[in-house]
Length: 440
Image (tube, rainbow, N blue to C red; front, side, top):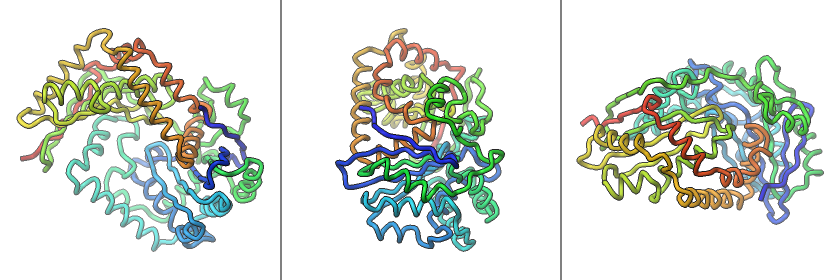
């Protein structure tokens, strides 16, 4: 069932979404800023993720953010992706104004203390080393994204390209980033739980209404239009201001197979194969998502049954899509079985993928995937924080209505559509392959 919500747009451009649920004693407060690693300077990557850390070091009037949350029984966290940065708080609904006070104060102005910046730079650098440089297979996605994307800033992950980029970030860089991207006209605020729309609106106006907007020349803003205008423009590039977010060079459709090989001190080889897919707002997204589930999600998937259970070519294999706002990648990744070379595993996988029958996807298999997708969506609707998060991200990408019928969109996908996409995408001249080999 679609989530019920109401919207209010402040004069400074902040978008408020309120979802009422009187059955819970809790409330969830989500703030999503339309900035991710895609918006960084290529010579100073990792900035969005570093700034996420810095947002918890104190604002102008609040020295200790976490202590204030703990005083009202709240929990909070945040994450950065290539497209957005998302902050969320869950707390007793009676204390919702406390969350609004905290979020509005750090949206207005941070403390910008050099000592705290130095600490967070050190934390992020250690995270980079621990998770991406010193861990076996840790740099796989750093390498693959840089290899696959030739033009688009998706070529680096939120952690950044290299440690030196984080080391050189100055306080002036942090201030420029904040006043460019962390403005109300570049943000969505979602409140869900045991709240009432008519009570939340004046509270949000009270705490956020006086925060100045960012200049259009330096921040990509939402249109300050009515919902009716948004819906009327839903099939145009002007929808919800997405055309005003900075656009980046898109990847050319590949015309020849690309190969990349790297050797690392790891216990076994890994094979990665990728093909271009659509962006998150494209009508074909749901079909691509289901195609990846059919091929490589779980032990009943085509690739797992064929290459792990039957032929013992791989010890593990999976398929998935990146799901980014701009066009991304359909990836198949697997670890060849002992005694099987990565070249042999690659060839057997090719023989399967590129010789698929014309109607290889059955309605029975597709229905199984649809049932699993429905179960996942229903599970995500159980917790108030998950519902609030979904609405916030949806409104940030376009408008929440476009994501409120996702079950129906998945169920509308047909086996004919899947088969068409399958044979359209799986072309060897469009493939980008990486051999991640054991150095021993």
